[in-house]
Image (cartoon, rainbow, N blue to C red; front, side):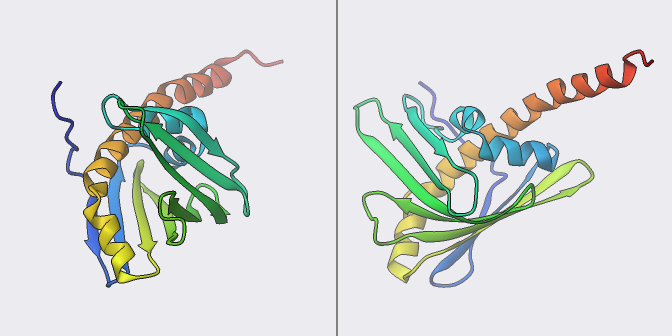
Length: 179
């Protein structure tokens, strides 16, 4: 099986001892990128990006105070689980949530994701704030940059696939006979 590689569109920049920023441009409209990031049926298509892994759990309660939880299962049966709580939601432009890698529940990160649309493209940025330098170092050393790059490439593909059905529905509605 060929090794998966990201397109290289994701940029990860360390901004302090406890923070980093992930940024990327998606060739898709913001409302579809947001939808792809927040509906379980779409998240399951892009988030679990490693070959041989499945995603049996993808729970999203998209409201302030709501929880999310994702569980991937590897080919060897080992689980990799993450969870968090939504702190702020301003659809389709901003989400603030906690993110916990479940083996280390005492070290949640706070993630502030923003989406800005310009000329049909979506400019994505997530600021990740850790409680310590050690937690931030571990996150960055985990291979997350490669995995996130692959996952966000897949997210772009899912969002682009939604353009067709949305555009087709709009065309049909506009061409429907009136009165």
